[in-house]
Amino acid sequence: MNIHEYQAKELYRKYGIPVPQGIPAMSSEEATAAAKKLIDETGNEVVVVKAQIHAGGRGKAGGLKVVKGVEAASKAAKEIFGKTLVTHQTGPEGKVVQRLLVEQGLAIKSELYLALVIDRESRRIAIMASTEGGMDIEEVAAKTPERIHTITIDPAVCHGKPCIRGLRYPVETLLELLSSGMTVDQILADYEDLEADDIYAALDFAARLSHVKRIDHVVT
Ligand SMILES: Nc1ncnc2c1ncn2[C@@H]1O[C@H](COP(=O)(O)OP(=O)(O)O)[C@@H](O)[C@H]1O
Ligand SMILES: [Mg+2]
Image (cartoon, rainbow, N blue to C red; front, top):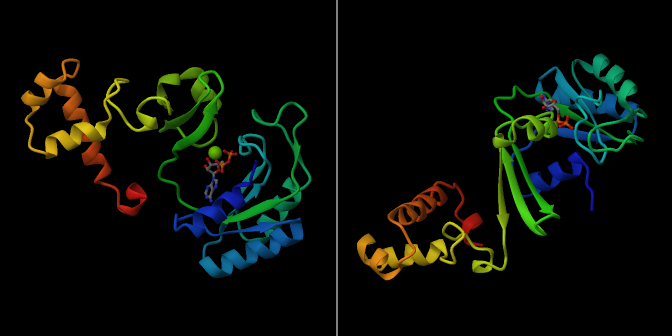
């Protein structure tokens, strides 16, 4: 199922994930009214008019404009609405813009990339992350693939739970052994293929998990 950016952001909003204020629009007139409302509400003259198509790469294809003021937003909406956008993800025939999202303009500190995708080659769910988010992840993948990190989840190993170096030792088991009072040396004596660094990695994993702000996200 494909969903638009404004629909994804509505879902985020519903679950308390902070997103910029934005209003979807089905015509350039609606977009103009949306820009006026946003500017009135936020006191920020900068708004972003964004094509809503089922594809990324819109910025580079002219499907997105950062503008100042209602008039400029109206002009941008007229330009983008009805346009056919061709991006890395649309195929050569492109996609026609039939909806817009008018969003408050933000001063962006950094842009990250995170995706959960089905990797058809390994037939597994892969989590991909990069610090080089923003406009062109395809280019990052082609030129600097080391900047994209991928974790593949294998449900057949440890029921898909985090485990040590592809070994069949769940991280949780190691943590339980440590918390029961076993020393690192005792654990290493019992499990020959483990190394001290594996145990420290398990502790580091636990430390990182304890940094999260809402524990219910981890427990459920
Ligand atoms: N609300 C916003 N405020 C400021 N800049 C934005 C906003 N939304 C998008 N941008 C800028 O436009 C770029 C492209 O937008 P994005 O939503 O990533 O679309 P796409 O990846 O399809 O081009 C972003 O990388 C960012 O620089
Ligand atoms: Mg982007």
